Length: 155
Image (cartoon, helix red, strand yellow):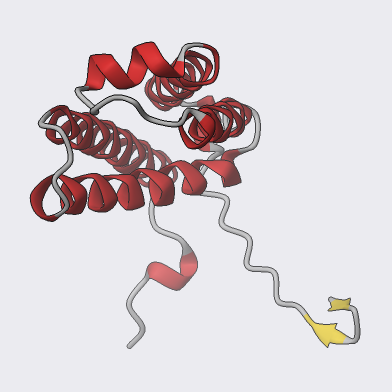
């Protein structure tokens, strides 16, 4: 197929079904999306309360925490969109991996409140559970369809 003057190669892989049809993947993605939306709304609507609860010193300008709230809300909506668009699941995996690294670096080296360790552990758990659900889904699809022609060893 030619797209925009370039040749694009499509490699159909019928053994890997849409991950959004897997009930476990749907539950995990849905919970992650709801978590981000709720956290985002709380940071957007009551940033001062959230900052105090997390152990950040006062006084603190609320613009950036509020901005974090809208960012988390947008991410949460994108995560929920992954329930119908499987390609967005990779956004969750990338975002959670980056969040884990960010939170642990800040907790270890940049004097963040101790609750940041828990936030990093929570994001790490979400990442682990999601990748385990995706791996389970891929194994089930592979088992259900059997090997493809290209998977058969050549002589």
